[in-house]
Amino acid sequence: MSLKSIAVFSGSNFGFSPAYTEGAQALGREIARRGLRLVYGGTDKGLMGVMADTVLAEGGEVVGIITERLFGLGHLHSRLTRHEVTPDMRSRKARMSDCADAFIALPGGLGTFEELFEVATLTQLGEHSKALGCLNINEFFTPVRTLLTHSVSEGFMKVEHSEMLIFAAEPSALLDALEQWQAPTVNKWIDPACAAI
Image 1 (tube, rainbow, N blue to C red):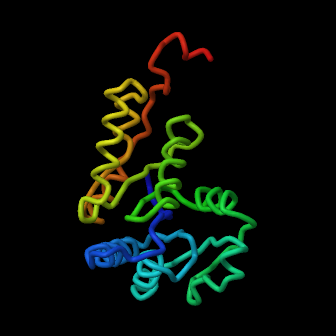
Image 2: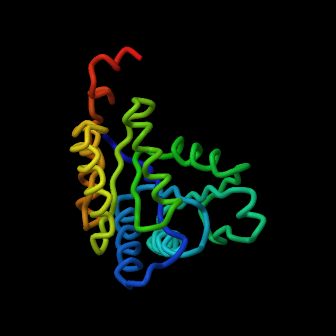
Image 3: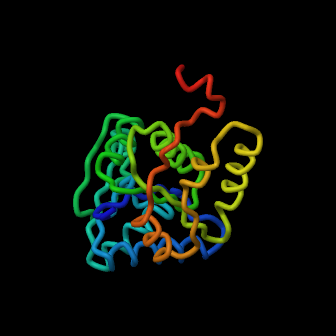
């Protein structure tokens, strides 16, 4: 697929290791180098702000999508190419999805995990066919990969769906893989009797 716009989910904190900031900067540089538009949560906090700052410093385009509550608290990044304010978190996520050709998760907390698994679920259900991946800085997402494998081994997920998330430690390799990504063509049900439900 031809990628023009990447939505990135990431932490609004920095994490304890400098590797996380360095990884966010590396992703930002690669996004700008490829002429891709960054779509993200619109704040200047944590890795979100680091990545946006880097893309902007490299001459790239950054679109921030922020909720009314966070906007009212003064969390909007002040130098974005463009921003949108949405009523709530659900509409924010939907708008980010609308604006993106693919998704990347950087290390983060509950919000990052929730966003990542929501877009994965929509892909699994066939509601969109957009690539998704994790920038596995410091092996941060390795437990997620283990969890997916465990779900397969316990009969809750097909292997094709566990493998649709791309894991890569380098931004260039991750973006290359997203461009080559193909959506799985199997349905989600493991028991054939359930497929008609």
